[in-house]
Image (cartoon, rainbow, N blue to C red; front, side, top):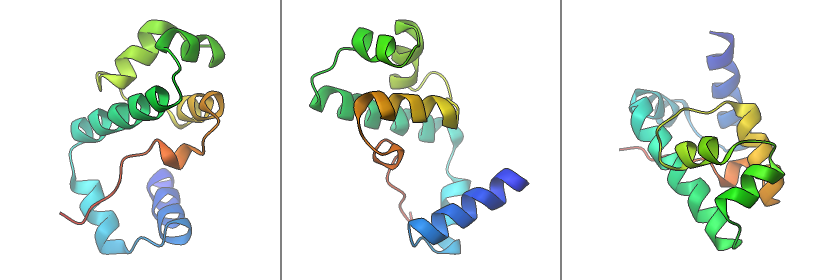
Length: 102
């Protein structure tokens, strides 16, 4: 519950996302979220012309782990997202999927 409250507060405060949008986001499936996160990670990585292997090495991760995140096969932690974004030299929010009200 504390995590949920933190996420809600973070999204509302920093991203100016209203509670109804946040609720819609929570109702979206976890699977869709992990797939979209993976797509965003791959997009950012590709745009910087960094290979999965290089990103994994820079993030102190395995090739397999980065690949599985990009394919949406595993849900990752916030810390892992932080390590990946730091290696890509972007803010973690740039990797998170765009929230919609649909």
